[in-house]
Image (cartoon, rainbow, N blue to C red; front, top):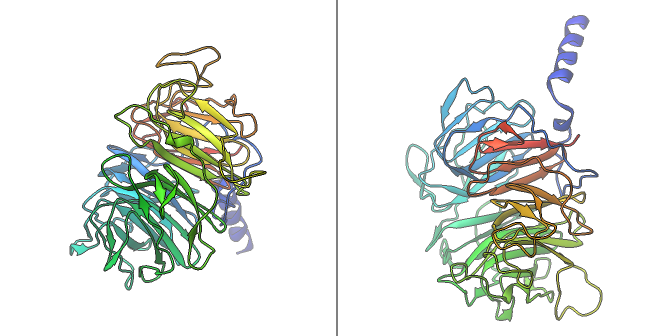
Length: 424
């Protein structure tokens, strides 16, 4: 009996890679080194469409987007999945019991308590019975069913961003109402019931485009960063980017502000902030944009670092550094302490003088790259990926970096729309 138990333990130690052992740890994720440029071989494949969101619930990876078929890592088994699926981080095994039906794309995910996940997007129905879940639902990972008691319908638009912390779920999009409560593009809900929190009524205003929209959110302690199509928050000037003090009662717009994104890019991109992430210690915020090749004086098609605790006045916070692609959009960013990872359909980094071309000093970083958080210059890390539309989702965890996109080549290997770079 002892011998058989020991053999099973040894087998488990061999089968579970070291990066999976601590991957489920909660809280901000700090890496002490850059991830490997060689993706793991265990991730499943999304066979069509695009991956827009990734969440990690314990040891389970949840993947959302616009797709209807996935396969195992070996490519031998194809499974039907409606815009959402889950797999085991350590083995890559697709969860057979988690196959919820969602009738529209999933644009955002957030890990929930007790083996659940929140999904936001463009859907209106969930499950074979066609239960109404307009834009937001909480699902059990065990069987994909909606969690009873959670009811938060988004009306007038869709959900594009989610962030969960403690008893609260923060929701962003271009909606105008959550349930019976008027909320424009931004709301805080009770994470258990979905009830709108009356202590959070921050209102974005004055869009640059056709309608107000939150594109991205990130949480660090008592600070919520929001980016999107707005120029004011509660009437205060915050062009496309602002911080909210969520620890205050009621929540209020923080005094931190930057006019960096008041600049105009091309007319087709009236609003262009697309992704943001806090450093693990919360001391800076990394922001990525689209916008077009407008040159070194504009924040278009760039990654930038902003100190969240700057010295001196908060009347105007300027970027510590800006890294230009030279004309290609960035959509996703992950700050891990060791690197600021950026993804889009870029061809280069370090390219302030490029205009859809490689200017002086430009370095090739097709589709994915890493920037030194201190200097703002591209790191040597260059795994490459097929560019396509671009990386739409990063998720850093204690074992590495998960990537979601719309293409099938990552790190010179076949990894259809989902991949992971492990810590070496």
